[in-house]
Length: 222
Image 1: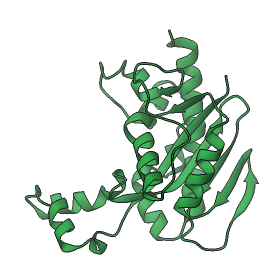
Image 2: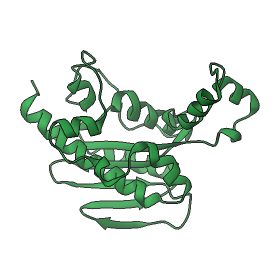
Image 3: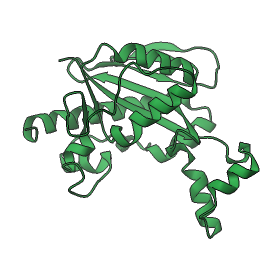
């Protein structure tokens, strides 16, 4: 069975770019300046208020993959590094490439992919008039088509959820966060034009997820 690990990085749109009515709607439950700022910081967590800037794919068995990333429509970049092919494009272009590649795999592996990556990929694709090549959500309790490691490690929500870094440290796996970058920094890095830093961070996330998958597959899969 051909397997691929998938991970995305997202950023929120500029809050001031939304029309006033939308801004008011987004802030309707906020009672303080702190809460309003928190909403603005989390715009990248929804496909309706943010976009995908990086899509990573890794074959956990061959350890080869691709990271597709946005660089604000600047000169196209394409190179290979450490078994990973890096390619730049617009959000529409990287989504089209992703769906073209994902057809070749039988099992998708993610960390929190059912709740985050899958709906984000589907809705942002629909926004660009792209029909997804696969249903990445599917039946929640069947891991052969989509193995969401967060679902597996919480036994489908029976136990507390932790982030990827926490699980990696628990199992003695090198964490992608050990190099000083985490998901909360992606928006700032993107605004600073540090697109390759985001792409390489995504590649490290893929590697950590692969190690976590091997651990689950060996000791916890039934």
